Each structure stands twice: as C-alpha cells, then as structure tokens.
Length: 260
Image (tube, rainbow, N blue to C red; front, top):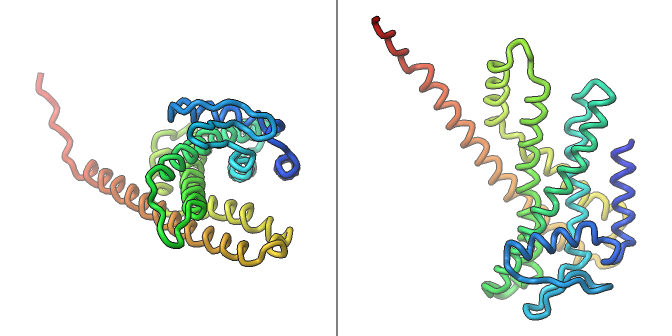
C-alpha cells in the first residue's frame, strides 16, 4: 500500500506540475546531458532547460517521471515480498526509490543525447517522422534498460538472501539458473505496459484522440516485442556461454601435485 500510494502521489504531482515544479529531475537530467554532449542548457521559467542555438528544450514531457514510477514499483515489489523483517523492508523501499531516481536520470539523459544525434542525422523518410522515430527510440531505450535493471535487482536479492552455510555453491547455482532462464524481460514488460497502456486505458484517454491513441498503442506493443526478443536472445546466449564454461571447467583434469 505504501508503494502504491507513493506511485499514485508521484503520478498526480507529475500530471499537475509545471517545469518549475520538476526541477528536482529536470535539473540533474539537463546537467548530465550537458556533460555528455557538451551542449549548454540554461533554465527558462515556465519552459524547462533550453539551448536556443540548437533549438533543444528539455521540457516536463522529457522528465521521465513515468519511467521513474515504473522502475520504482518494479524494484519495490521485486524485493519486498522476499524480505522478512520490517527494517529490511523499509531499507529496501528506500533503496528502490534511490536506485529508480538515479537510473531515471542516467537513462533519460542517454535517451535525450541519442535523440539529438538521431535528429541531426536526418534519417527520416515517408511515414517515419521525427516524432515517430523519437517515440520508437524512447520505448526501446526505456524498456531495454528496465530489463537490465531487473536483472541487476535479481542479483542483489539473491546475494542478500544467500545461504551463509554454503554461500559460494548456492550463489553459483542460482546465478547459473537465472542467467539462462530467459525470464528477465517478462516482469519489466508487465510493469511498462501496465503504466504506459493500462493507466491511459483506465483513464479513457482514447476518447480525446482515438486514432492517435491506437497508433501510440501499436508503437508500444511492436517495440516492446522487439526489445523482449533482443533481451531474451542476449540472456539465453549468456546462459549458454556460462554453461559451456562450467562444463569445460568440470571436464578439465586437475593438475598433478608437484613432488617435493
């Protein structure tokens, strides 16, 4: 209930916030973008962070708050039910919020820099407009890094809950079982679709502009399937490599002891 209340509160704040109210996330994001790209931004009241020379604006719509909500909910619910003590649950909840915030700034800054380079590359043609390519790129980057974040969360949880009596053996078995299981994209995909499509459907956003909403849904579903396939293949490939290394190590003969 605490996690849900925090997520709903953040969503409500974002839906009514102006650029000045989102300085806590727009400011750090603009700073990281400026550091990576070398493009200087200045704060403009009521607009966001602007670079007039390159006609770039980091506005509230670029804040990535929806991604922050998804990452926070996914992190919190992935670990809370595996912990027993109240103190450990509170500790995990606080860390989930901190990790999601840092991840959002880093991923969103990367997405903005990639968008700048894609726009300058002028690779648009026919129906692939800058707006549509920007949307595709954002969905792909957000979901891909969300999958990586979930895989990292699983490693943290397993390391935290490992058996103190047989740490090394259990850790290797859990790692081997998880790295090739192919389940990593499932949970991030669930949270991404629930926030990006489920909530707009509940709010009946399709009444405002039906064709545009349908196009938005199709873009999300198609790109999500591509990301799902890419992450599944990467995870399965890593699992296969890990298993081959383990088999090689087991078959390798032990060196004979040196005679004294």
